[in-house]
Structures are given as C-alpha cells and as structure tokens.
Image (cartoon, rainbow, N blue to C red):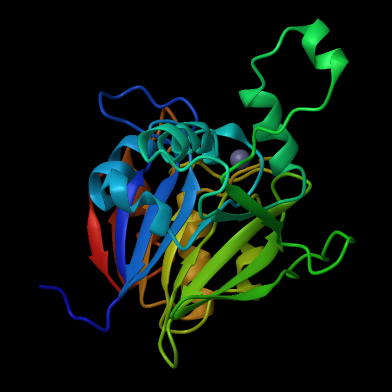
Length: 278
Ligand SMILES: [Zn+2]
C-alpha cells in the first residue's frame, strides 16, 4: 500500500506523436490522491490504460481531465473516453458530467471530431456531441494569458495551476499539488525551458518532455531537449526529473545522460505503466 499522503503518478503514455516501438502511446498521465483523480493529457492510445487502471465503472468519478494544448497527441482519446462514458456507462445526457479543462478551442474540436453527419445534415442544424463533458478553459477571462499566466483551480483535495508556455499559441505547463507539500509539475510541450520557471517550485517532481532528446536545441525548435529539461529542473531546485514524450529518434538512455550534465538529482526516462509516489 502506498503512502496515503502521496500523489501517485501513473504513466499512461510517454511517446511523442509518432514513436514506433510496440506499446508506445502518446501523452497521458494519471494522478491519484485519495478520492481525487486527475488526468493530465489523453493522447492516442492512453484511454485503454486509463480505463484499465481506474475501471470503466469509475470513469464518471474522474475529477478532471486537464489538457495542456491542442495538438491531438495530447487529447484525441477524449473521443474514446466519451464513448465509454456515454455507452459503456449508459450515462446518457442527464448523467453527471466529467470536467475537462484545456485551452480555448478544445470543445469545438472534439465536437467536430465526433460529428458523424453528412454535410447536408450539418447544414440543416446544430449538433451537440459534447455530453457528458463539461468544458472550461485555462483562461481566467476571455483574454489569452501572458506567458507564465494561467489559473489556479481546486480539484478535490488537490490544487492545480496552469502557466502559459511557448509551444503552440496557447500551451500550458500544469502543476498539481496537495496542501503544504511539494508537487508534480508537468511541462506539457514547451519550446523554451526557461518558461517552466514560472511554475516549477523547489522540491517538485518535474515531469518534462524531452522530444529533442540529446540533440542541441536550436532557435525555432518547438520542443525542449533533454539538456533543457535538466536546466529547468536544476534552476528551479526540483527534487526529481522524469523525462517523457520522446521523439521517434530519441534514445531515452541518451536523453538521461544529456539531462544529467545539467541536473544532479535523480533522473528517470519514464515508460508506459511506470508508477511514482510523489
Ligand atoms: Zn505539441
């Protein structure tokens, strides 16, 4: 039995958008603390391990699905989750909603993805494919937050914070923390490691993408390298660095060695199914 005061992080998927090894799955992470269940991203292939871990009958009790940005490898399995909620659980439209928080524009994209009508039927009227999801965004008002800006929201016994980072026009790093404790910061996808300073706190576990692996970052790159992940962990005083979201050509062991030139703490290249107590 795990320490009851620990967050449990389960890696649902650690691959980049098109990694090829058998069993690879795109971004998705399950964070559990008591009765609070948080899903950080839900990319392709991650619905199945989520359902296996939580149990299909308990899917409606997910506290929140938090989406970092609009690239499909971070959210497309919301379609599978919706099918399971509506059909697997016979929730119907009157059932309890599952909260989804993400960038602006996520809800209409999912609606479009699920819209099975012909163009003629589409022209004839509106369509509602979003039940049983309840969408909110990381914007505290209509405006795009400045870099580093976002929201702080209470999720059951946890607090979640977002901080806008550079990657797409609206991308967020996310931090999950229980009261008076170090937390888990997830980078989402981020082009500049310096942007993570707005959200990583001393003692945190930093779950950081390293899509660039052990290559050297160049201006214009949209992902950090393992060196950048190491710099982000070191400069913020993180306790531990978990590397993830590896590009198709990245050797995770090389990525760990690269990050270790910048960060002296523990570094792990995560794999699908890995679990960590935080
Ligand atoms: Zn991305």
